[in-house]
Image (cartoon, rainbow over all chains, first blue to last red; front, side):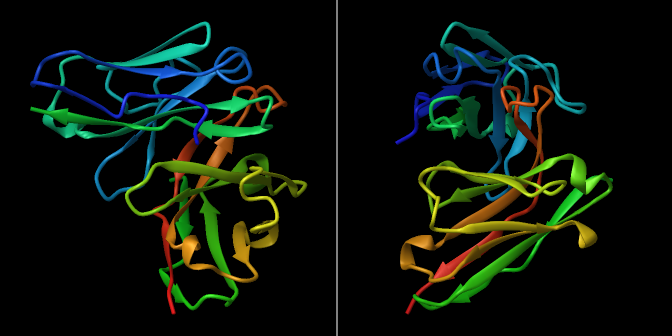
Length: 110
Length: 124
């Protein structure tokens, strides 16, 4: 049972903005930085956002992250067909003394 | 180019032992963590633990403590994940990933480079 909760699914049409939430607690999101990973079908995960809102080199600026209190969000603006994937939030958890992933959100482009 | 190359797919029987590998290249292997992540068929990502090849500091998820052993050979830039007695429930894809943290306490930890994964199938 993951300690970071995400909606199981999200969808939008091409060009729309989609937002994915990630709810945690004071021992993880509340005290540590949040990261987001994208997993395209049948491929390894890829780092999408680190340190709450930083994009690694090569990640389009359509992807943005934010954090407030014990929750975080990933926004995809200008949704494209190639954004259809599973998205996971993650953070270090001080109580568990380990890294925790969110439950994952499947994004569908309609 | 920074990359992690994982060993090939494995098919094993329950009770057998197994050691899979993850070889790093293109960066200082001893200066970053190596993490392991399990993904069971059709399921989400589960963090198993991390090892720092520089000093072999190892942290296990409580869910995997005692179930697997992580190790690293810095002379050949390779990390390992091993089981002494496999179960059918170990059937999964296993990813290794390079971990970075600037805090010194893992508060800012993230996994920036991933291997392609090793499929482990355990069946009688």
